Image (tube, rainbow, N blue to C red; front, side):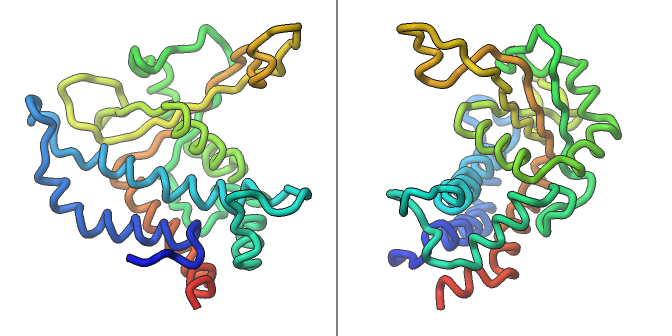
Length: 240
């Protein structure tokens, strides 16, 4: 396929076509010595979703407030409608008001009291229980879309992703039915001479943010994400 005119807008649609076309194949591929865990659809879906979300965010949304000219991967000038859509829906809106939001699919939990868990050891029971609550549904619906998308972006960039079973728990030997996206909240670093944490802008871990969604709902969300681009004529105008 040829070079897209508007990479950050057209790529998500191409990835969605790959998900649709290759889903039957992924459904027939199993994890080597552990076929009881089910097909590799979760890994396939998550892997394909990363560029679908990150590329538009990096090349449009993250460029919006730059005042020093165009960046080296900056798609703002290609389509003003795309910039406006990201401003209105992502920068100014709430997740519950976004066109790609489906009620009760996302759950959000901000954890601000330590000690904070290491998700490589599994999701703690108290976190899993809190994510199952109505409060988590309400919190996701009301959270700023900018916070939601930053959490997703951060989790994908830094490996903050946990596979969960049908009960929203971390368990070995059971098929994956849900994803938890986990992002750290850090304080401002205390800058001292030669302090590496200061150079990289990393302060003390002050909290964790958890987003949970089922695999089926995540796949549906990705369709809605691409549909938002197309319905707002962003993609259509870019390809015209």
